[in-house]
Length: 285
Image (cartoon, rainbow, N blue to C red):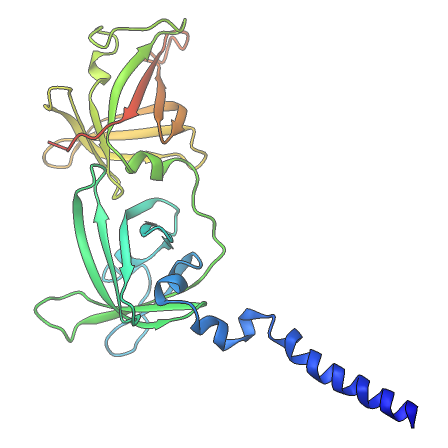
């Protein structure tokens, strides 16, 4: 009799303990996911664009010009900021984001380096959970029947750390220069004066550099190498024709300092100048 009571006690104890173990896995517990707000779900993981469909439900190639501008790796951060890179890891857009409390609409405002708005976009959320994020974008304001559904899936793809986001997040002012011996060089010195000014490296891959007198000096395209070691700018004329290309070595790239080294004469690598920039709150002219 005593043995039977012990067996019954053990069975009851095991039955009580079992639900406690099964509830520990949030991935298999719908209640755990329901406790997250739509904003928390969107910011819980990086997203990769993995598909697109037209208004007929037909697949659209991600290289198709009608959808390619929406394709990439997206990082919606818990602090309300976002950054989107192309599938080639080149930065495409950055700014602020939000999702309405019901999870019906996602809004983004793309920002220029000086914090002014480049564009704002609202899209209809069709599906949002821990693994899938699909929105509908209407690409013709005059014809609401034209739209595309952009499909994203959860990814472990790490955000590029080569300095693109840092360079595009703020205007930069030239605040110093040094020669090859580490001596300070006056910013009006002819050897460096042409490199001095306010720089705006926009997240869409374009740039403008103004002199400290706010007069435009050059504009065109910019990029940073995948390893973060060099910055390239290609100046364009008003018709989009290439004027010149300059590649410089990046010495420092952080939120408080962007310093590059320029060698004016490729045939004499022993002569160079280090051009120092710091973030500045200066609106683009």
